[in-house]
Image (cartoon, rainbow, N blue to C red; front, side, top):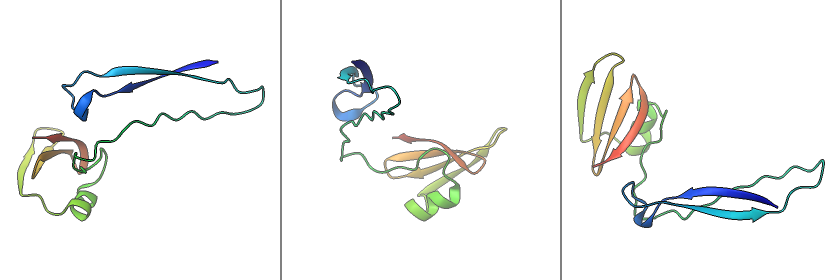
Length: 102
């Protein structure tokens, strides 16, 4: 048997909630066989969809619409903030660095 560990967020899926490791045993493949192990965690449906890292500004606009407000680029490399209801998207040049929930 092979032990596989996955990390799971705590209740409500928030960063502040305590997480936990989950372990499971998987049968080892026979010699010459290939095995793919995928861990699927529960997805909370109450969290809004947000842009993913590395999306371009054009893709974000196409998928999520125009932001309510935009902050001008600051620093080098230039970091730009777009404000949407409930979250802010941070860009480096024209690529998403990370979305942050307000």
